[in-house]
Length: 466
Image (cartoon, one colour):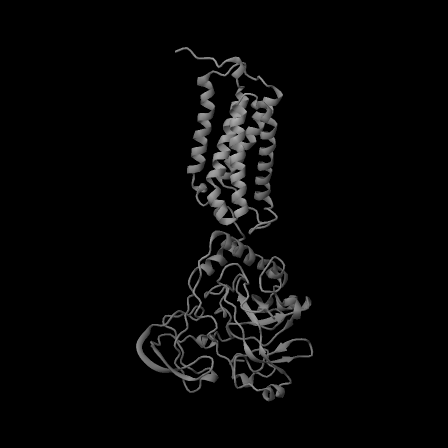
């Protein structure tokens, strides 16, 4: 069969056909990825839809009579889109849930950007030489859009097109990914029933969690038969389920004061997960700035209480280490610092965010897994160097103003809301990034036993072995 030549008035140059085909391919890909992106950031999803439909409209327009007038617009649109892609893969967009975070390059987006770049080249050539080819016959003309269709199909069927937005924004610093994972899994410990011996306060209690290594206790096996045991906070004897005592947890269970054991990990959507990873990853900046107590003190931080197993030693700067109800780009760098001791070379091990004066539980970090707690009836003693001690502990109804006066302190009814964040490499908590206590912080003998609070005095540690 002889080739049929398109009438001269309807002829399209090869460059126009190629530019139109590549525009259509990029437009289809943008529209196909709208659901993935809109789940992460609504504005980005809408942007993908607008870009896709605009590219499709231009692709059709270029093939219509007089469509060459749209060549300049098609060049401009693709230049803008390619430039936005380059920004997103180098410095990241300045706004959105992953502001200033560079996305990873995947086959899907790289191929689309390449199509747009080549389309710019063909459109520019068509403008420079309107009739690059004297005539395009129907068979040869069909090959170009068919190749574009095949390429589009390959891009959309590639593994990188699945959850494209979530995977692209998931390339945070290594700490961020690990931290989000620790938030997403259930806590390793629930509140155990604790057997109490007569010498509880001196660290001689027989408290255990079945099959529990010292650094990461796990839930004990529980039977239906009730037994008498002691509440780990008030020491009151109450009835509760029996516990098979298999391994001594060295006093770790005594640290749990019931503030957050009821919390269950909450699921997070892609946007929330990305934002939380970004917030937590920023704590790496604090690790670099304040690796030791000496570095913190040189920057004006002062000790706030003695070292306590599971909690560490807290260092603050007064109002400079208070945050509001919501953690944002600025105050995420304003927590109290937690160290594994009080010596100049003691290492940074975590952070405590304090939302003082906030009405109601703070919204805090992205998602609902940062369970904030508060302490009541705390005796605070301010030392001459600006450090603060809590010689009588917290949450005790038997601490009176008169008793606090003996230590030269003052009694506060409520500390305000606070949450611990365990993101320092080497001190990640096996119980979760937001857990109240961290098994990695032990006394010198590897236990968690503490002195009677009346014996703390001005000591820099509450450990019973000190």
